[in-house]
Image (cartoon, rainbow, N blue to C red; front, side):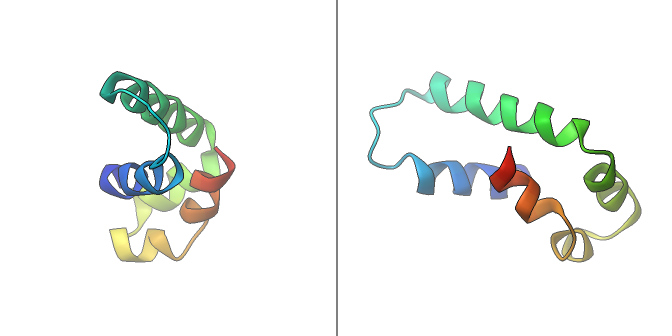
Length: 64
């Protein structure tokens, strides 16, 4: 899941002049927001990675 988050961040901020630390801090913020989403966490904890990707996770990343 972390690689998905990082890939999405790279897509969003590819034209920005952000440092690695900027990206890491942003990724941690996204992680924290996802951790607050009980539905997403339940799906992640009770399904395979592929199954979880069919649930709320992709939209939750965009929302975060």
